Length: 98
Image (cartoon, rainbow, N blue to C red; front, side, top):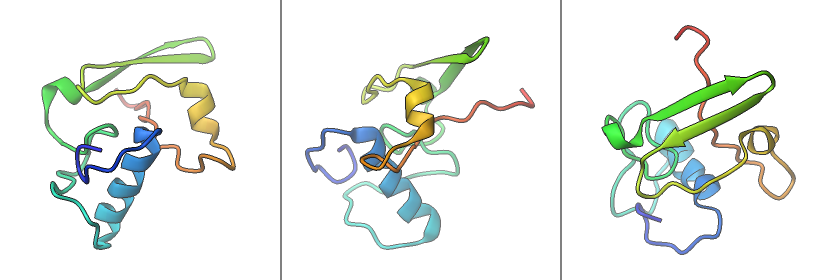
C-alpha cells in the first residue's frame, strides 16, 4: 500500500478503508495521508492527472481506464455489486452530469 506500506492482495478494497477513515476523520496509521476531496482509489492522491479515471459505457457494461502507477485491474460490474468477502466496493462513480 502506498500509504501505509502494508502488503495486500486487494489494494482497491484496502485503499477504500483508508479513504473512508480520512473522510470520517478517524485516525489511521499511514505515512502519507489521503489527500483532497476526490482521492484516487488506488493511491489516495487527489488532483494528479495520471490518476484520473475515464469511463466508457456500452449498453449495460462499463469499462474504465487510469494511468495511476498503483492501479489494479478489476471488473467494474462485479466490484460494484460487492460480496461478503469484499464488502468495500471502492469503485469509481460514473457522473451522470458529465
